[in-house]
Amino acid sequence: MKLSTKTRENTDTNSNKKTTRDYLVEKVCNLLKNGHSLYFLGESGLGKSNVCEMVAQKLKSEGLPVATLSPGTAKEILIGVAEDLGIDPNDENDKPMTTTALRKELTEHLRVRSCFLICDNLPQIPVGLRLWLDKLYVLGQPILGTGKNKPEKDVIFKLIKLNLEPLTDEEITVLINKTASSLGIKINPQKLVQEANGNPGLAIKLVKEIVVSNEGIDLKKAEPEHKKWFALDRWIVLLIAMLALFRYAGKDPLLVIGGSAMILSRFGSQVVRYTPKKG
Image (cartoon, rainbow, N blue to C red; front, side, top):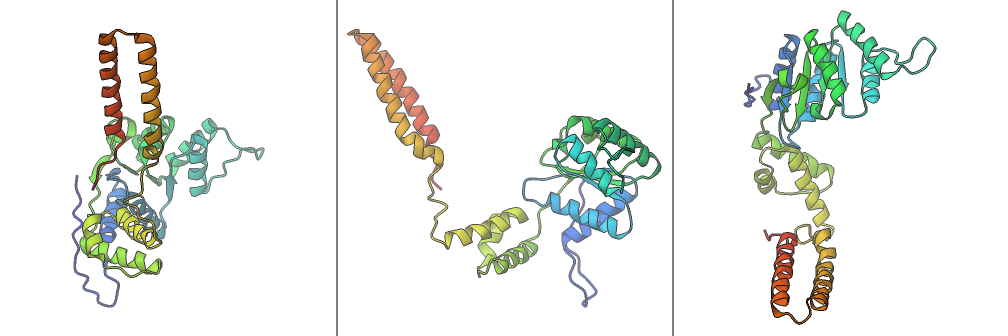
């Protein structure tokens, strides 16, 4: 399932122009309110977490109950859900509930009072809690999940997949200029827009890299740490191997030639492996 997020004209000239993400959030909220459970799929930096936050805020602004789940321990996640729903995570003796007791308390609460469950990075939620979410899904709880991939298992399998589309060039331009302004620099966003390719997270990163490069640090020429230490280590390893070869191979020329070829072959493959590509 793919939602169209093309920019529309805003007929109200007195209000701010809505972005593609604004329209997307409206559609997602309507789908959730109609009982659908969704799963946003997209690469890192594309804005999945931001969309989740926007959806949560919009639902809350309408007075609807929302509980968010982020990766952590089962106990931490359940306490967060309880706090979002206004449930005391302590028992009658004012002692913290066990994970099992808290999960049972939340299940009973949600049987009577449904809410919207928003799970950013759902595949990293503990398996036990995903199975719990599966039970809540069966009870009719609308769920919005996100992830860089969509494992076809437990509750994730049941969620409707949505591919999160990149931002438009116009929106990326606005984001780049806003980020540059906040960092106190002026840039020509045209080249960065092409490099970002609709990815807001990457666009912000590119602007920050310019700030760092303005401080005299050349990011492109920075040598990887593994290259720095391996440059010396590989020669030491080669020397030790050759000494061992001549020590134990004796005067047998075949052993020396064969062993040398094997060592040089291995050495060459390591050099290729650890030499970064140019460009």
